[in-house]
Image 1: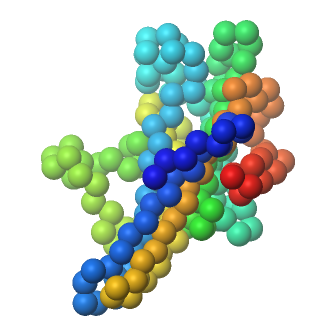
Image 2 (image 1 turned 60 degrees about the vertical axis):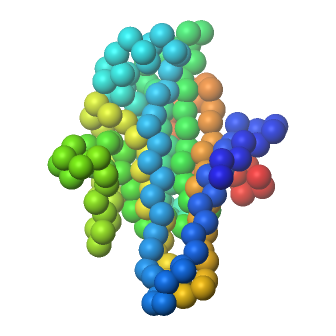
Amino acid sequence: TLWLAPDDPVWLWRIEIGNRGKSPLACEALLIQDLGLGDRGFISNNEAYVSQYIDHHVEAEPTLGPVIMSRQNLAQFGGRFPWVLHGCLDGAQGYATDALQVFGPAYRDHGRLDFAGRDLPSRRRQHEVACAALQSRQVTVEPGGSAGWTFFGVHDPDHQAASGKADLALIDAARAA
């Protein structure tokens, strides 16, 4: 379920699963958000060029694990620098910042992700396909049980300064939502 905050630039993705099987099920959730930080014409003119100028900064938040902050470093109309922060309210164990780290040969060959038994690389990469990818912490769901995760995004249309530890305070808006 996607939920948009009515008064803040915050969104929440809620994922819920249930185990209808007869055995415990170890699982985690992935959020993969394609990033298009910039004015519409700027992005649609050349997505790879736009993506190269998105700076990713990853901070480890004490209870949430890694959070990804992404800022467009090429000034947009009016001198604005669009920015976004992504995290998992239930805690993340891994991350990626470029689609090359997520979509590999299995996706090209079969149109599906193959992460069985693998973790995201948890390494910042800035290439031509910027994305925010987060891997939740793993849970075990007993037969008949359920689990859920909530991923969030916080947007700032004009984040003049480079991303840093002080930006973790913006997570409070997602927690309050």
